[in-house]
Image (tube, rainbow, N blue to C red; front, side, top):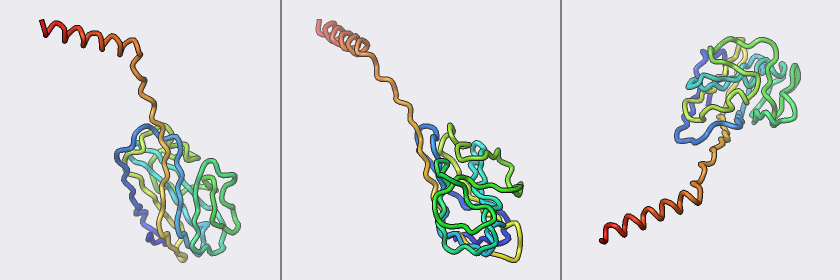
Amino acid sequence: ILSVGHASGSPSLLEINGSLGNIVDVNVTLLGLTHTYPEDLHIALVNFSVPHGVYLMANAGGSGDINNLDITFDDEASAALANNSQLFSGEFQVSQYGSTTGLLPAMFGPTLDNFDGISANGSWYLYVYDRSSGDGGSLQGWQLEITTSVEDVPAPATLTIFALGLLGLAARRFKKQ
Protein backbone atom coordinates (compact mmCIF):
# COMPACT_ATOMS: atom_id res chain seq x y z
CA ILE A 1 0.00 0.00 0.00
CA LEU A 2 1.36 3.38 -0.97
CA SER A 3 0.41 6.24 1.29
CA VAL A 4 -0.88 9.11 -0.78
CA GLY A 5 -0.38 12.17 1.35
CA HIS A 6 1.88 15.15 0.86
CA ALA A 7 4.54 12.71 -0.33
CA SER A 8 8.29 12.99 -0.57
CA GLY A 9 8.20 11.42 -4.02
CA SER A 10 9.27 7.91 -2.94
CA PRO A 11 8.30 5.57 -5.79
CA SER A 12 7.04 2.01 -6.01
CA LEU A 13 9.44 -0.17 -8.04
CA LEU A 14 8.76 -2.97 -10.51
CA GLU A 15 11.76 -4.80 -12.06
CA ILE A 16 11.45 -6.49 -15.46
CA ASN A 17 14.15 -8.83 -16.76
CA GLY A 18 14.30 -11.29 -19.64
CA SER A 19 11.79 -9.57 -21.91
CA LEU A 20 12.54 -9.91 -25.62
CA GLY A 21 11.91 -7.32 -28.31
CA ASN A 22 10.86 -3.72 -27.99
CA ILE A 23 7.72 -2.20 -26.52
CA VAL A 24 4.71 -1.70 -28.80
CA ASP A 25 2.10 -1.01 -26.07
CA VAL A 26 2.03 -0.11 -22.37
CA ASN A 27 -1.00 -0.02 -20.06
CA VAL A 28 -0.95 0.85 -16.36
CA THR A 29 -3.64 0.04 -13.80
CA LEU A 30 -3.94 1.77 -10.44
CA LEU A 31 -5.64 -0.56 -7.96
CA GLY A 32 -7.71 0.71 -5.05
CA LEU A 33 -6.98 4.44 -5.45
CA THR A 34 -8.53 6.47 -2.65
CA HIS A 35 -8.10 10.21 -2.02
CA THR A 36 -9.99 13.08 -0.42
CA TYR A 37 -9.07 15.63 -3.14
CA PRO A 38 -7.92 13.78 -6.31
CA GLU A 39 -7.20 16.94 -8.30
CA ASP A 40 -4.06 17.34 -6.16
CA LEU A 41 -2.60 14.02 -7.37
CA HIS A 42 0.24 13.79 -9.84
CA ILE A 43 1.00 10.17 -10.74
CA ALA A 44 3.86 9.29 -13.08
CA LEU A 45 5.35 6.13 -14.61
CA VAL A 46 9.09 6.31 -15.26
CA ASN A 47 11.73 3.99 -16.67
CA PHE A 48 15.09 5.58 -15.79
CA SER A 49 16.99 2.98 -17.83
CA VAL A 50 16.16 5.00 -20.94
CA PRO A 51 15.03 7.56 -19.38
CA HIS A 52 11.37 7.95 -20.37
CA GLY A 53 8.28 8.88 -18.41
CA VAL A 54 4.63 9.83 -18.59
CA TYR A 55 2.41 11.66 -16.12
CA LEU A 56 -0.55 9.27 -16.01
CA MET A 57 -2.67 11.86 -14.26
CA ALA A 58 -2.04 15.41 -13.13
CA ASN A 59 -4.73 17.77 -11.80
CA ALA A 60 -7.49 15.39 -12.97
CA GLY A 61 -10.84 15.09 -11.26
CA GLY A 62 -12.14 17.63 -8.85
CA SER A 63 -12.65 17.95 -5.14
CA GLY A 64 -14.99 14.93 -4.78
CA ASP A 65 -13.59 12.09 -2.68
CA ILE A 66 -12.69 8.91 -4.53
CA ASN A 67 -12.76 5.53 -2.84
CA ASN A 68 -11.14 2.29 -3.99
CA LEU A 69 -11.07 3.11 -7.73
CA ASP A 70 -9.37 0.86 -10.29
CA ILE A 71 -8.15 3.07 -13.12
CA THR A 72 -6.41 1.73 -16.23
CA PHE A 73 -4.43 4.10 -18.42
CA ASP A 74 -4.46 2.92 -22.04
CA ASP A 75 -3.71 4.99 -25.15
CA GLU A 76 -6.52 3.14 -26.93
CA ALA A 77 -9.18 4.20 -24.38
CA SER A 78 -11.95 6.44 -25.69
CA ALA A 79 -11.53 9.36 -23.26
CA ALA A 80 -9.34 10.95 -20.59
CA LEU A 81 -10.22 11.22 -16.91
CA ALA A 82 -12.62 14.05 -16.09
CA ASN A 83 -11.26 17.51 -15.45
CA ASN A 84 -12.91 19.28 -12.48
CA SER A 85 -15.55 16.61 -11.89
CA GLN A 86 -16.00 13.26 -10.14
CA LEU A 87 -13.65 10.38 -11.07
CA PHE A 88 -14.81 6.78 -11.58
CA SER A 89 -13.19 3.39 -12.21
CA GLY A 90 -12.56 2.46 -15.85
CA GLU A 91 -10.13 2.73 -18.76
CA PHE A 92 -8.82 6.16 -19.68
CA GLN A 93 -6.19 7.91 -21.74
CA VAL A 94 -3.34 9.67 -19.96
CA SER A 95 -4.95 12.69 -18.28
CA GLN A 96 -2.83 15.79 -17.69
CA TYR A 97 -4.42 19.13 -16.94
CA GLY A 98 -2.49 22.26 -16.10
CA SER A 99 1.14 22.16 -15.09
CA THR A 100 2.91 19.15 -13.64
CA THR A 101 5.03 19.27 -10.51
CA GLY A 102 8.40 19.00 -12.20
CA LEU A 103 9.00 16.25 -9.65
CA LEU A 104 11.01 14.10 -12.06
CA PRO A 105 13.81 14.86 -14.53
CA ALA A 106 13.00 12.12 -17.06
CA MET A 107 11.97 12.83 -20.65
CA PHE A 108 8.20 12.93 -20.34
CA GLY A 109 5.82 12.34 -23.20
CA PRO A 110 2.12 13.12 -23.44
CA THR A 111 1.01 9.48 -23.97
CA LEU A 112 2.09 5.96 -23.05
CA ASP A 113 3.50 5.47 -26.55
CA ASN A 114 6.44 7.51 -25.22
CA PHE A 115 7.76 4.06 -24.21
CA ASP A 116 7.28 2.46 -27.66
CA GLY A 117 10.45 1.17 -29.26
CA ILE A 118 12.46 0.72 -26.06
CA SER A 119 13.23 -2.48 -24.17
CA ALA A 120 10.78 -3.48 -21.45
CA ASN A 121 13.68 -4.63 -19.28
CA GLY A 122 14.76 -2.42 -16.42
CA SER A 123 13.44 -0.58 -13.42
CA TRP A 124 9.92 0.84 -13.70
CA TYR A 125 8.84 3.33 -11.06
CA LEU A 126 5.40 4.62 -10.16
CA TYR A 127 5.52 8.01 -8.44
CA VAL A 128 2.48 9.27 -6.55
CA TYR A 129 2.70 12.88 -5.43
CA ASP A 130 0.07 14.95 -3.63
CA ARG A 131 0.87 18.59 -4.36
CA SER A 132 -1.09 19.96 -1.39
CA SER A 133 -1.18 19.12 2.30
CA GLY A 134 -4.34 18.59 4.28
CA ASP A 135 -5.77 15.73 2.22
CA GLY A 136 -4.69 12.15 1.86
CA GLY A 137 -5.41 8.72 0.53
CA SER A 138 -3.89 5.43 -0.50
CA LEU A 139 -3.12 3.20 -3.44
CA GLN A 140 -3.48 -0.56 -2.85
CA GLY A 141 -1.23 -1.50 -5.79
CA TRP A 142 -0.54 -1.13 -9.48
CA GLN A 143 -0.08 -3.30 -12.56
CA LEU A 144 2.05 -2.78 -15.60
CA GLU A 145 1.03 -4.52 -18.84
CA ILE A 146 3.67 -4.38 -21.56
CA THR A 147 3.37 -5.82 -25.06
CA THR A 148 6.57 -6.32 -27.01
CA SER A 149 7.25 -7.21 -30.59
CA VAL A 150 9.96 -9.72 -31.30
CA GLU A 151 11.07 -9.51 -34.87
CA ASP A 152 11.04 -12.89 -36.57
CA VAL A 153 14.47 -14.33 -37.16
CA PRO A 154 14.60 -15.06 -40.88
CA ALA A 155 14.84 -18.76 -41.65
CA PRO A 156 17.83 -19.80 -43.74
CA ALA A 157 17.02 -20.22 -47.40
CA THR A 158 16.20 -23.77 -48.53
CA LEU A 159 19.14 -23.68 -50.95
CA THR A 160 21.52 -22.84 -48.10
CA ILE A 161 20.23 -25.76 -46.01
CA PHE A 162 20.54 -28.09 -49.02
CA ALA A 163 24.13 -26.90 -49.72
CA LEU A 164 25.13 -27.41 -46.08
CA GLY A 165 23.66 -30.91 -46.22
CA LEU A 166 25.72 -31.73 -49.34
CA LEU A 167 28.89 -30.43 -47.70
CA GLY A 168 28.21 -32.66 -44.71
CA LEU A 169 27.78 -35.73 -46.95
CA ALA A 170 30.94 -34.91 -48.89
CA ALA A 171 32.95 -34.46 -45.70
CA ARG A 172 31.71 -37.79 -44.38
CA ARG A 173 32.64 -39.53 -47.64
CA PHE A 174 36.18 -38.20 -47.55
CA LYS A 175 36.65 -39.36 -43.93
CA LYS A 176 35.71 -42.94 -44.86
CA GLN A 177 38.31 -43.22 -47.60
